[in-house]
Image (cartoon, rainbow, N blue to C red; front, side, top):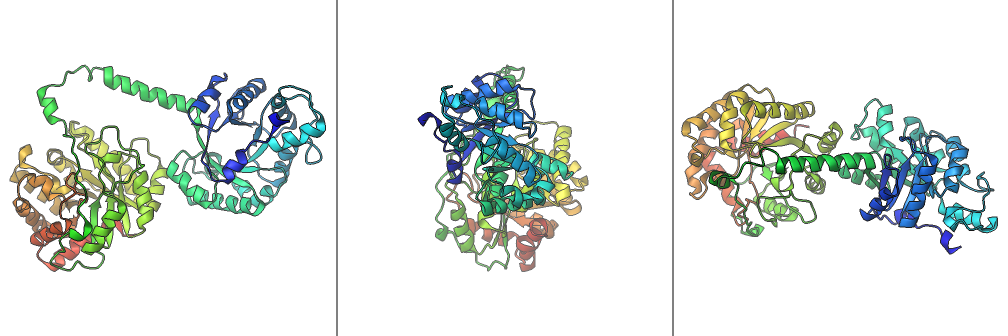
Length: 567
């Protein structure tokens, strides 16, 4: 009976090995199973609950999975003894039963999957798992019982309340938490960041631990939230998606790529002016050792906050065309700089290098702890649940990359800002503008009337080389005096460019004179691309602009507290 040996699926999960599952709803041929194997999946879930697929087709896909070396499950549309038996006899190795709310329902499913005396599965002698060779019942029954994995799907508050008795049922191997239906039952569909989701996973995990069962979480595509729920006790069985959804995503992405590559805009031949406007690719210098940074001549007040730094760690995906080489600006390297200079609070800002993938941002916030807050960048497809999870991690603002939108008409920029404010406003966050000075100038009339709190990075980024004048900077000061905005005293070298930092001193002093209570300081560490820059020198520069101790206290402590630490 070597060909009936039990699979190592449960052992793999118990050992904590990441196991990827593909749900099959639309496909009807065995190619989808081969594609799952070719793309690194470990199992497939044939979904009869949410498709019109026949039992015959489902069984054929299960047999194809076995031949491809994958584990297979069939999610049945109901807890019906006859259908479960037909699927198992047809070659299925796992059964998923939906909407289980009590031990009696779980027991009916488990017994339908097991031969007597543990269950009531009808006796057979010829099954695909044995190559359709007749096998005596005394050999067949035990081998099939060991091979079949029974998964119970708990997706209602009632099921969670009965987690202990469900997990105690003999013959149940795996309990799955269905986040989609659970949040729908709560009246908050898709809001996976709701605390009741975590509470439910924690309760199910405890029940599974108490009874030696495994727990998986389904319906959540956010890897960061998956990681959090695994920490509560869920095993690393992760659904990558379903074939219909993944086909849509791939087709849409390819259509967008071809439209960009071959559409009307792509047929425009770049001119010399276009090439001149293209941002240069920068080679970053190694980071300056922390202990070589100049100590500021004054003592920073308690709770001094650096409101703008970035970090980079290996293993996190970068955007396809980053503007600079990978910096060695790690979390630990920054913390050594902060400790040397007396910075006790800090705000991590998502860099362009990682685009809208905030995984490192969230991981860093968890590692550093509550003294660190975050500023995220998001795409148009962000969900409220993801933003709620960001808030719990410490995010308090969204970064709007207007360099990437510098050629947009002003009315489109205004619409984009208003759309982003819909995300920040209900969470008490603010908007941060990473923007060329030319775009800041164009938006100033709008920003003067904007009721939402916002921060303009890098002192407004108004460079003379971009044709901006002292009068334009004066308009920025007017908005600062009367609106809801703040300006970040960061990146003075970005404005000075090749000139000494003293050339921007009048800008810093003018900002302090205009509205010191609406200024924050940011190091812009690791000062890309010049990792050798002295961060302590920038704190001395702040004292040149704000010689009064009270003003510096407002800039380093009070304003950051309002923006990032009010809760």
